[in-house]
Image 1 (cartoon, rainbow, N blue to C red):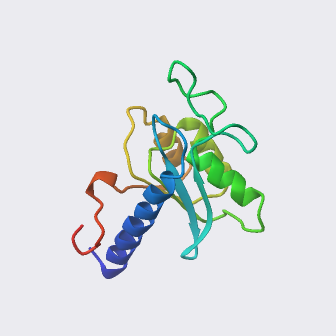
Image 2 (cartoon, rainbow, N blue to C red):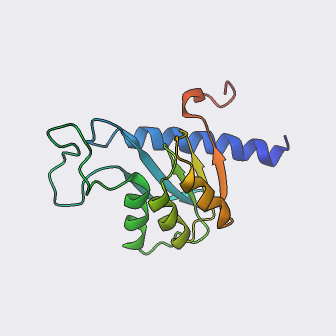
Length: 152
């Protein structure tokens, strides 16, 4: 592993830990997902799964199923940056779960060039679409993250 690769891996782990902390903001009971958009080593946007602005912060219905209008963390981060003066073009997205196909389409359209995800999913169509679009996809295992990069 080169020094540059080693530094990037350490940064990936740090940002993924931050995304995990951000996921704690989610009101969803079944699953909490966080996302950070990074450009030039700066956080330009963040998101977590939850209901749209102005809706009650309840993600599940009475049968404990996720309501159909709940936004994924990636979609929240991308829509937030779209409403700002920042551009996601060329950015890296850190997301604690594997992007689904719908989020993959948003990622491609947002010009994001790299995606680091922390949890695999049984359906990998989102990852395949990202790779087909030439986006670098990196797995950073959430279960192996610790507080000190030297121990990871």
